[in-house]
Each structure stands twice: as structure tokens, then as C-alpha cells.
Amino acid sequence: MKVTVSGNTKEIAKNTTVAQLVIDEKVENPDYVTVTINDEFVEHHDFENTVLKENDVVEFLYFMGGGSF
Amino acid sequence: MIQLKKADYEKIIAHAKKNLPEEACGLLGGRKDGDVKTVEKVYLLTNIDHTNEHFSMDPREQLAAVKDMRSSGLTLLGNWHSHPESPSRPSEEDKRLAYDPAVNYLILSLMEEEPVLKAFTIDKDRNVTVEEIKIL
Image 1 (cartoon, chains in turn blue, brown):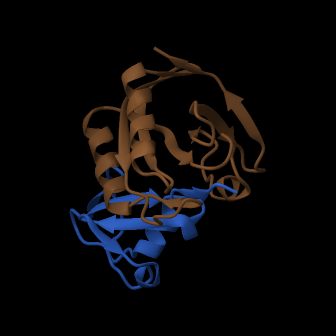
Image 2 (cartoon, one colour):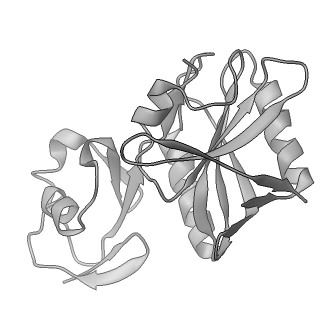
Image 3 (cartoon, one colour):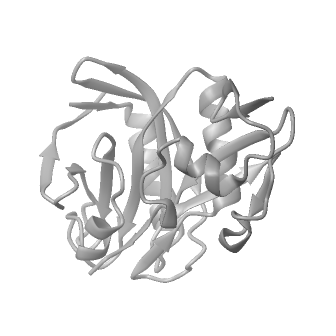
């Protein structure tokens, strides 16, 4: 089925979870990645049980933060 | 080298000063041509930590900025944040959270009367390299 990942349309297997997509997309430092599906944020603890659907639009957002000291 | 329009440089400083005493932050969208990176758009984001010692970008604003860059044909060149009370250099926390060696991390120090903006790259081993900023 087709989904859009970071602006690119691609074919993925049916019943792919967010957790599997993170692996398939070779996302580095997944602990620091936030995922949205159709602009809705997916909690990290839901990655394993969130199944992607046809035409979903997925974004990976790396946590951006830091400190002064 | 990073090329930054004077108006965008001033926009960063104005946003950082407006948010004092907290750290301020944002993203940089632009184009790469070999080693030259030209900033085309500066995004001003909310520091959801609201402290003078840390920053975390608002993920909703980050998402909007990423989508805006894509629709404008721009590349994420890096991010910027302010150090209200410390020098323009990556802190240990900055280095730990620098996930991408291909982007630039700009840090604006406001500890002295004259703001100091510097750009860095940070590799996977947390080695820091200074990169020249040319204000256009």
C-alpha cells in the first residue's frame, strides 16, 4: 500500500507498524524521534501498536534541544 | 560557509532578545551549493522549556516549519538557539543532542552587550567544528 514518508510516496507492506517503519526507514536515534501521522503525534509507547493505513502521511521529527551549560 | 541575510541575522537577534531571560530557538531553511549554504528563511520557534538554561523546540511548530520548507523547495540547513548567559559554543548538552552531523548548529550568545553568533557542526563523536558565517 502507498504512504507518504517525509514527503516521499512509497510502497510499504500492509499492517506495517510505526515501529517497523522506523526500522525500515533506518531512522537514527529513534529515541529522539517524534512521529506524526496525518499531523497527529504518535506517542513513543504507541509505536508498536500503531498500524499504518493506505495514504497515511508520516513525518519523522528529530527532537531539537540543548542547553547553555 | 553559511550565508545569512542581514535582515535574517537581525531577526534572530530580535527574537532572542524578546525572549530573554529564556533561551530562544528556531530553524534555518535554505539551499546548499557545494560547501556554501545559503539561508533563505529563518523560522522562529517557541522554546517549550521556557528556561534560561535549556531549550526544546515546540514539535508542532517544528512540523509546520518542515512542511513549509518542503513546499518552498528548501532544505533544513540547521537550527539556532540563544545562550543568554554563556558564550557562543556548544554546551555538553548541545553536543549530546546534536543528532545530525550534516546540519549546522548556530548559537547566539547574549552574555555581552554585543551579540555573538557562531555556527558549528558536531560529529557523531561530539567533535565540534566552527564554520564561517557570512552576513550578506
